[in-house]
Length: 161
Image (cartoon, rainbow, N blue to C red; front, side):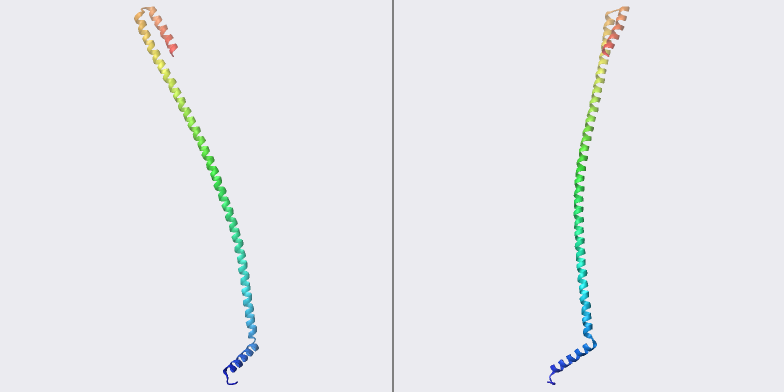
């Protein structure tokens, strides 16, 4: 039995364990394992806290995104309403402008017609007066002719103008 190598390995192992127990290596190993366990537990707790914080931030950002989306939709709807209102106002202003321009053009046309009619009447009166004076001067002679001519010219001008 002393000649077998397994026996001496077992004796060496027992002696080594005895030295380790005497030096307190098992306490050091257990302390190191406890510290490692505590560090792992702290890391897990930190990871859980970070996960909860990330979930909270995600929920907050989703809420902000939804709020921004609603606000954007409201802005778009408001812009559409404003654009329609501005278009309606522009159309009304354009129609009013066209109506005023039409009315102004019609007044100018009516004024031009009245002026042309007055010019035609004045020209007709002058022609009638000239014709009457020519006819009267050839047919009637003397002072009576001059009086009749002056009186007739005055009456014709008064009636035609």
